[in-house]
Structures are given as structure tokens and as C-alpha cells.
Length: 266
Image 1: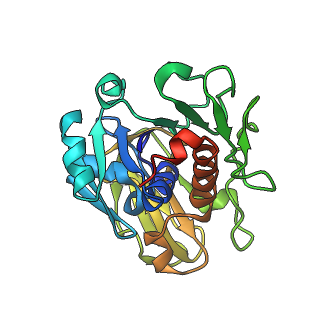
Image 2: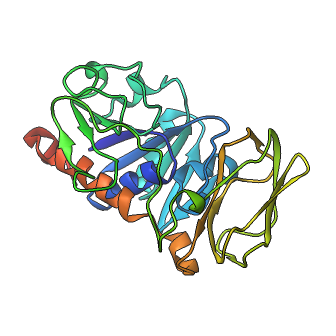
């Protein structure tokens, strides 16, 4: 079974990982210069470094869609720069998962694949996709909706040890980001993490730098640039999140609900 996932960030990569482990052949499409905070667990990072290992699964950058089959045969996830989805007719996926988190209706429709799944808000099941999977944390996270929409984005990150909004590091200005410590570093309160246009971003409290954008990327004031984890566990930086696995489980449920697709899983 071939699955095309639009987007290669940490949420999409958790979905890709879950489907890959269930036997699907996965192609991830990305922008030419994707922006990812949790780079160590994002297949989209292959755009910059040609390959990326996510929990033991290799993501390999390809330059044409016909290279995907070779990567699949090697047992890897294929990653292709194709923001406009020009590869769709050639690849002919059984399942299309849109995980770009644009929070608006997609440009593709129900005829893009036998099963089209929208991730999070912006999609309407039965109208622009067959199913929507809930991404908001809480009682409904990971649930599959066959009619209607997911909940609106709260823009409030998960609370970890009583930290919510302050877990997210945001850019103080427009400019180019310069990152100081590596992802996985233990950061002390007040320690310098990044600079943007002469402005410093320091740690509001002790924690582990779970993710941060690549140095040299252009950012805007208020934009999320990093993620500080107060649990102090560097190994979490190399693991996909519980949220992405839960949402991936919803995607897998939607796929397995279709007998014709279920029969195609290796």
C-alpha cells in the first residue's frame, strides 16, 4: 500500500513512522526550504541533509518521483520536494494524508486518492477529504471523523510540569536566526539559546532544548523557533511525541476501516 503524506514535520513524521511500521510504503512531500523545530524527528530534514534517521527508520531524499520505488524496496521512507503535488498522477497513492497544518481547505479533493485524510482543523470530512483526524490534545485526540471538522486550534501547547505557553521559544524580531546550543542540550535558566537581528533569546527556566530551527533561516517576530522541555530528559529529543503517535493511530484506523486498503498492507 502506497501512502503519500504532505508535510514532513514532527507530527507528519510520527504518522509516517506509524504507517511504515504497519507495512505501508511512505512518500513524504515537502517544501524546498521547510521550517521544522523538532528536526531530529522530522523526515522533512532530509531536504537539507539528504537522509535522516527517525527512531531507526531512514528517510531518503529523492529528486524524482520514479526514485520512490527504489527507496521503498530498500525499506526506507522517501522524501521529495514537491509543494504543488505534481507527483500525484505518477505516484498514484492509495492514501493521501495532508498534514501541512495550514488550517484551511486543501487544493486537492476527494479524487486525489482512494482515501484522503485531513489532519487537524481546516478540513471538512465528506467535502474536501474522506476523513479528518483530531489533533487537539484531550479526550478526542486521535479520533477519526467521517463527517464534519476537527476542533479549532487552541494555540496553547501541551502543559509539561506546569509550563504551557512559556515552553515555546519565539523570535523577538524579524531576521535570520543564529542558534547557539545543539538540540538535546541541557539548558540553564538565563542561558543564551539564539540570536535574531541582535536580539537574544534566553532560557526562561531550566530544561532540555527539545527542538529549534536551523541557523540561517529567516524568521519573523513572534514566530515559534524552539521548544524547551522542563522534564530534563535529552532522550525525548530523539523520540516522536505521544501526540504524533496518537494521531498516527487515527490515520491507521481510518485506513484499516477500508477492506480494499487493508488487503494491500504488506
